[in-house]
Length: 405
Image (cartoon, rainbow, N blue to C red; front, top):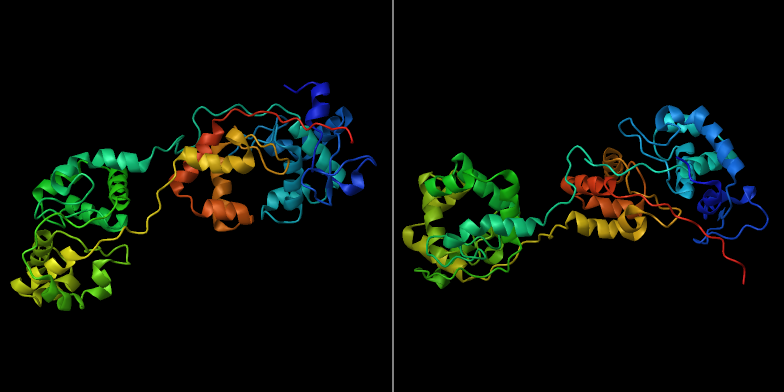
């Protein structure tokens, strides 16, 4: 259902939309201050003419109601008119790399582009989606909190925050998540032999393992609160051969290689024995362990146990709600943009939003701001944001004409 003509006259005062050559002489500058854009009023006649353009050129994909039904075709009903116009201009110049859209708008003049933009902007927007995208992750929970909950069963052996207080049990802090996940999966698939660990981790899914590893990576690191039998000073010389992989002082700079600074000494010795006898399979570590006798191994363990561990370089992931707060700075609260140049995201199709975010990440859509924002998003973040905005209620924006001072 269309809005009333009286309401349209206000709602379609398209700040920042119309080109200078098509302006009435009394048009005011757009809010953004651009030299090539001005405010102009779309009349009911303009809307009617825009409808004819839509019927001839746009309806096959977008429908006369502006509600996209095919995959990858966005809803444009109720979209900000200036944004529609500016996007059509980008397609017209080949800036989107979409041949089909480019061919449709290639020969349209500015008058047609403006009026069809006004027409679709005048329509009632799509209703919020109940289901969202295929991945349907409307609001990603805090993975750190989830990791803490999943790690509750680990505290008895490894310490509440991953700092061991039990000799023979490894500390789990200071480890890159990639390494800890690989180690847990090695217990799960039997590459590492430990019946209790195999039983415990077999009950955990991939997401839980990821959350546990992230939780421990973000905990404040500290040395294991356990005794070391060897002589740290003697172990320092032997540690020189380990620095190439495990870093100076045992702080690794490689995600797949564990940091061993502050590690429980008894666990370290047991691990070296396992590499030595082949129960842990690693040719490099087997050769290193084979070159050390029991005394040298204990001294090396004591040296690393005495070294201060450091937190790995891991960023705490944002929840969907936290990401949405950042997106709302440009796209408006809950995706209801008040900037005529920024698209409204509320009730947009989730599959289309995912498609666009991936395009910005790959560089096939150009925007320095969007590239910087989307580059750090995970696949889960993209799916969560798309579903979140698909479920938001769209709201119209009225551009008001203010009297001259």
